Image 1 (tube, rainbow, N blue to C red):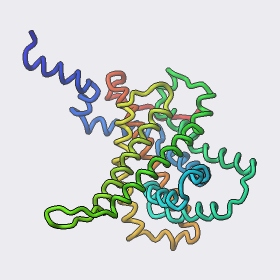
Image 2: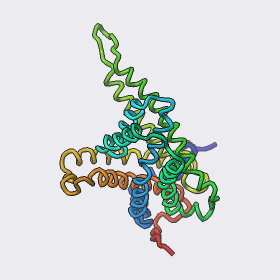
Image 3: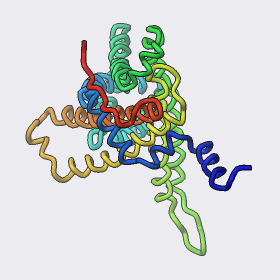
Image 4: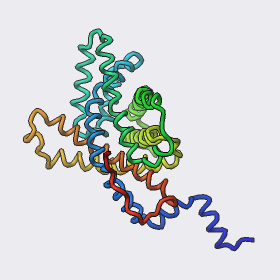
Length: 311
């Protein structure tokens, strides 16, 4: 029969796992290892490439999504929802992007095959580059499990379709929550507005959607099959870091930034590119957390990571 201490250790290992136990015992060492590996993998350089192609892809992707969804949902409501959640990705610049989408919808006319093909091609560029960046972070997986070319070619378009369906669902739910916010309830002889509750629920919906999207990226992009709990760890890490960073960016652009004086008419593009680069860096940092978490017990935690070198 096992002693109480031995039984406790056994249950702890079964419920939490040795990797999680190591992180809980050495959180600082694990975080420092993640940052060193991220630097060795040229994480900021990879984030710059992802951000550049994301800037090329974001408007064509949104145009395709809006064109498809306006057939089943009101365009004004869809653009309103897009504007709210684009603010999470590009703080302070969502209004400019939504205005361009509204202008395109108002003047789109007939979309020819050439324009449609161009939109589809550019909307997939960011996913292709992101997959390449992920292959650097998860190099140990690429070596062990090489993905077939056909899957790499189809992943961006499958993901675009999934994002469109997700946006449709979020628009419908957000509309219902906004309707709830206009209602009042009578409690203890007083009438209480549900507007505050509606705002909290909308924020929680956005954060849950952010975690879900990030987790799905970590499940799909790396080669091989990633355990969903590992992907969730990376998704929560990147989402929390981005929430903190997003609020700092909102405060900075509202109070201290003079980017409009320096860049003039290029301000929107510069701010969007900066926001996308920071978001891409945190996305890849979340991937690095997963990669280092997977390697616990396999690689020597004290070994220095090898710098990434091109051939």
